[in-house]
Amino acid sequence: MRHGLTAARRRAALARFERFLERRDLRLTPARAAIVEAALAQPGHFPIEALVESLRRRGIRGSKATVYRALPLLTEAGILQEAVVKGDERSYEAAVGRRHHDHLICSGCGTVVEFEYPAIEILQREVAARHGFELEGHHLQLSGRCPACRGRGAGRGGDLRQGLAEDGS
Amino acid sequence: MRHGLTAARRRAALARFERFLERRDLRLTPARAAIVEAALAQPGHFPIEALVESLRRRGIRGSKATVYRALPLLTEAGILQEAVVKGDERSYEAAVGRRHHDHLICSGCGTVVEFEYPAIEILQREVAARHGFELEGHHLQLSGRCPACRGRGAGRGGDLRQGLAEDGS
DNA sequence: CGTAATATGAGACATGGTCTCACTGCAGCG
DNA sequence: CGCTGCAGTGAGACCATGTCTCATATTACG
Image 1 (cartoon, protein in one colour):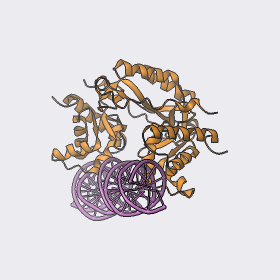
Image 2 (cartoon, helix red, strand yellow):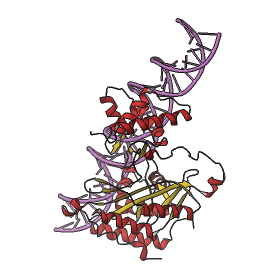
Image 3 (cartoon, protein in one colour):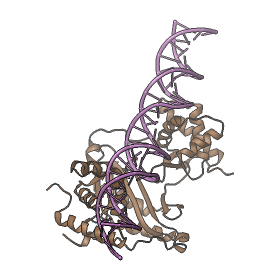
Image 4 (cartoon, chains in turn orange, green, yellow, red):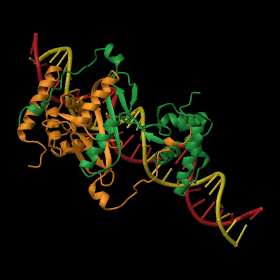
């Protein structure tokens, strides 16, 4: 199977979505169901465009507008979550059946590694509390060079940028 | 003074930029100098648009293109750094004479609080190392509701979203 | 059924950012 | 001291992502 999730999980997600919609007096329309299906069938991280494309390929005409309208619902329902934001376009990824995680991105080849690190989460909560904030979410993205890229090209490894903070004053 | 940095720091930054450009066989042109000046005169975080606007107000016609071209140089030189990315538009902030920090953003009013938390940084480095990555940078942004907004509207505080991870299998 | 509320699709629109290209002006040279 | 080359610049065309509008379709429900 090349889908990110089993059929059972997809069914569960759909049920969850239905419950969510009901609570909001919204309907689980064919279009929305199709979007859920298609979204969960996407591999790991995917840009919205890919989702629209995927719907189109399945013969379902899902207009861009409908998809864009549905995505916030899916995330609010906890079925998807925003993932790596790379420049302009947003990416999403399935949230069902997955633990929370953050991303490590290789600046050389673009590889994305997911990691889970509860200790960091705890500290984040601590920081928020210290400022009187009620933490709602966070976005943590580390960038660096993966093992492969480190070996390969020495690349533009920056020896520039040596901490201007020290001079002056 | 209402500038973010003292004149001394601005001079230092300019000198640094000059050195940087020289190393790259680029020139410190009037336009670039003006952009550095204007950038450092901006308050805390600023969107690119504000910078363009500021240049225009100073009588210097700095075209959008020139500014957009200069910004990567400024960041590479360590004079500016990308800051909060809010939806579409990028923000920058001065990096000179400042310690590294991350951001805490209120989802209610948009207030941005900066914080510094070395412990988190250390953990980040640890995560990267664990995956064989050489850490180059990171982007950490916490979002939540600030004290004021918590007090005020109860808002759309979500009791929805209760961890789908548990069901199914 | 009939009706009102909601959802949809197509595409117009807005916006942030990039690219093109003619032009400018400095640097090095004869 | 005027060429010449080339990086830099400015204006705006262009592009992509995402939002909004509005006419139409669907749904729930009396």
